[in-house]
Image 1 (spheres, rainbow, N blue to C red):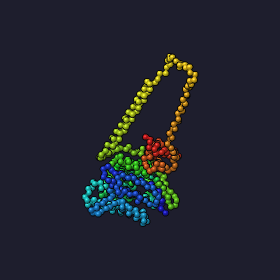
Image 2: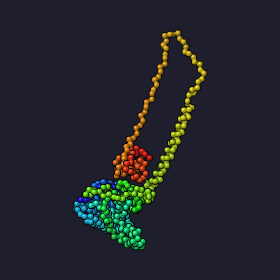
Image 3: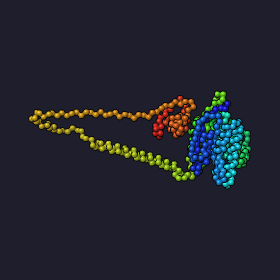
Image 4: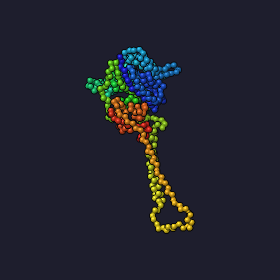
Length: 449
């Protein structure tokens, strides 16, 4: 009996400022796919099953109405996924079928670009594909061209299909010299024109395993070391994917950027046993080796080029206006106090002659007695009621992202706001079991600075 996997996956895709449309595509187990090239989008899924397939592609589609030709890696991936779902087969059969479809699609796309005399420097030539197959309790990664796929288990982080890293490890172990490693690199570089789908060895899955599929726009902006720091965070896939795209956008804005994170939440085998990882994830990986974010925008059009200057200018003007308003209020208060002192009546006693009222002989005149005016008692004004604040005790397996999603919905903004409200330091993942968190309403959470 195959293992039942509970997975949590999320993908973010964003258009580059230098591009007319988003040419990155993704495929999430047949449930979500981006074949219409939406500029900016996000999709997530959580499901149980025995087999999954995920993919990210870059410039892997072509259509020509005159020649009645149309090729798309998403359509081929959909056919592949349907075939392996209907026809049972071993893991080797499934990987061979995937390699055949991806390489054939790449060859067709190259031939159409050659017919149209598209130069080698054109972005359409930078094709890429990264796929992840989860089947029989194992994972197989694949990459083609410019896309990349990574695997993270605790402190272990590696590129699943990068053969270049093997020579570096051999040098570190003292098996080969630096000169031999350079000759291997030159040999591999000479063979780069012949694109092939690289497949990883099958990996036995355990709970907590994370996989990252990225396009070259993300890889060129961040690099492997920073991707490792973000992927090692103890957060759910939604926050990790958002963090990768947001940090990549700060560093580079020219190319389209797509990042997909797949996390293995739970594995239930046929015998009822559960495989758990013995590795402990890094607690503060970003604080140790992550470089500070830097904003580099090149050739931005319109107002986007000066949006930072406009933002800071508005902040300064707002601060100056607030100071002026406070000064005017203070002056107005002092002015009213001085006017009150000038108009205060003099209550000092002076010598005055009291003349009694004239006596009258008419005894029938009624005597008038002044009536006492009733004293008015001020009514007590009700004090405003405080917004309801709930308390939540952290349980095993909770993350700040899952708690925020439970109380405020699937919106990553409330993760940081809830962390700041409970005075949890960035990146808002240092919560412990038994910790009591204050859960205010959305209005109170949005009202904080």
